[in-house]
Image (cartoon, rainbow, N blue to C red; front, side, top):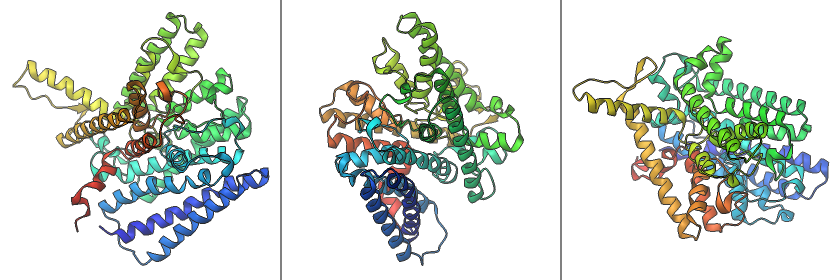
Length: 482
């Protein structure tokens, strides 16, 4: 373990992160609102802490090892999440507690989208923009970590693609150098954001709303500048644009990279995970739309538009809303929550277990059924035309087991704080899957639950965003041995 190197990188990250506060600070100065002192103090504290760490540890120049990568990754979301809470905590007019400020910041940076703030329509633009920036920065952080760090642990995203097809877009690095990989992904991320923002603006959003919602759409975050979320705009065109970009952002960004390099969309159709994800989305949206119309909840046109939007929003773990889906009849609210456990594809900004892992679990289940019928047959597990290594399947099952165990334990802790089963179950699902909105007492926001429960949910958000193992590995004695 080379702690000095990790702290030096953390100092650099904090220094860079402080610059993100300059944009809302400029907006605050131009708008002459009361957030100027809070942003100025937060910027100064974050920059000072970053420079102090970086200058103190600047002599540490050794190459990063695997364990250093895990520590830096965990510190990125944890420490930056806490420093990101400063503008909320130091803005007196906002009137939030330190716990609420940390909850809002971690929710934004992990692209969860759960909020404790009410009255968004009346908040200063500087704070609204800052919330959206947190999600956007968290989104690109997710993409880079998914292809550069998590594969080293064996349960990350990109190494699963080696089971399908070889080539630069299916390896742990899309290009020979991680720096080039990060640059390529950043360009794609910015291009998607810009395209999404222009589409929103063309559909009738103001430039400010278009920019803010483009940030949270591509990051699959779900923060909005209005309490009514996307429902504020009351526009089917905007809903459909949002649906399209949520779907695009939930697909592996490595696929977008390949599409850009090859100038072809054919590989989307050939990719097993993308097909599995598309099939799951088709089942979810069809069931949602059919039940909304059949039950008389919505008319045909509204049922199609709102059913499609909410199914995509919840399943991809974005969390935007056009209606209160928690009030929909029958099994729909719970079904949508269950689909959110899948989330997006690996290497995307989506949360959840990821489509690739569920696809491998499904294929393994089918393989075991066949093995029961033909006990002496050799039945390989394949994804596409390639055989999946036993180590990959084992890693997926291990991840699923730990994910389920963490979910159950933390849900029981929430129930011990006094929350009812529906609220505790949905709150844990919404935070561990980085979804945001839940059911029961947290269907609108999380302002009404206790501070201890919010702390537990902050932990769940970090565990979900860091793929569980990346954070849990820090608590093993073996990790800290020389």
